[in-house]
Length: 147
Image (tube, rainbow, N blue to C red; front, side):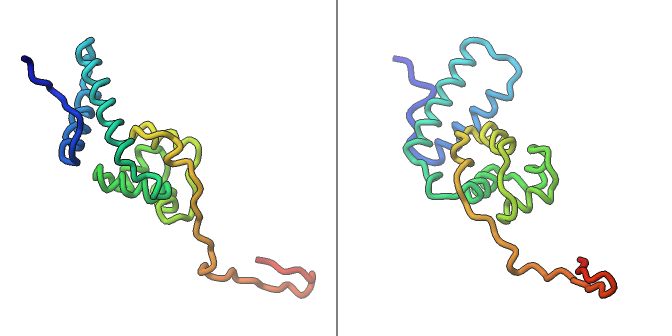
């Protein structure tokens, strides 16, 4: 009897090994029929594990993004390059100062193989209560206030 190349995922070590294998298969240029079937099988096994061990609902989209970045060893600079945005915008997003755009949600969903709903959920942005006050000057001759 032939032994199976892949089995139902039982632990995180096996999960990460299968994810790495899938990534390698996806980056391989040739895609014959057996390779496509292997990709489909690995994808199915990984998705099953994700669904059974999903902790995404307990995380807001930014916590999820930070976790995925740590798990995949992705620095903010690399994320900015991937998303095609500035490092400052990525910093603002990671610090809850700016929200995720539809385009960024789409790209994150594709990159991490998650549904867009994982990133398209409500979370609070920080307010600028601690921001420095703007310097307000009075212009007496015109009776207006200039900033």
